[in-house]
Image 1 (cartoon, rainbow, N blue to C red):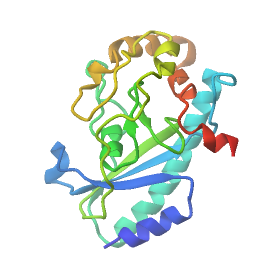
Image 2 (cartoon, one colour):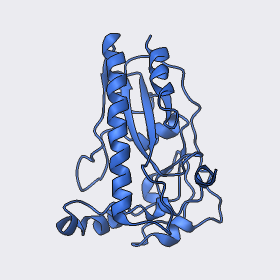
Image 3 (cartoon, rainbow, N blue to C red):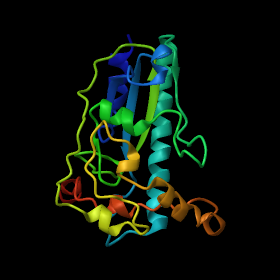
Length: 222
C-alpha cells in the first residue's frame, strides 16, 4: 500500500496541506475508492492593502507550478505500486453550469482540509482561503481525515461579502447540505470575471474575497 510513501513525499513539502477521503459521496465511487486532496499556499499571501489582480494571478501560477511538481512525485509512487488513479481537470465543463468534473472543494471538506467560506471558497485554518487545490482519485483505501460539514466563519463577519466587486455573495453560512447557489450567485461572478477576457486574454482572477479573509493571518505575522 502506497500511503506511507505518499506521506513521505509530503514530508519534503511541510507547508502543503493534504488529506485523504473516501469518495462514496460522488459518482466516481465505482471506479476509485479514495481521493488525495492537496492545498498549496499561493506564492504571495496578499492582503487588501497590497492586493493587485496581477500579483494575485502570479501567486496562483506559482502555486500551480508547485502542485504539478508534487503531483508528479505522487504519480511515480502510484505507478510503482501499479495503482489505478486519475487526476481530474481543474477546468469547468462548460460556461453554463460552471462545474468541474470533480469538485476539489467538496473533496477538501470531506478530507478535513477546510470548510466553504461565505465566499464559496475553501477556508483553511493555516492559510485561510489563499490556497490552490488539486486532487488525485486513487483506487486504494487510506487513512481518512475527519470531514468538515459546517462553516466556521463568524456569523458577524461579512468582510468577503462587503468587498465583492459584483455583489455576488449572499452572506450565508455554509453547511455540507447546501447548494452553492445559496451562498453565491456564481453566474454573476462569472460574468464579471469574463468581461476581462478581451483585455487580459483570460478571466479576471479576482481574489479580493480571499485577500480580505482574516483566517490564516497569524501565519504572516509570526
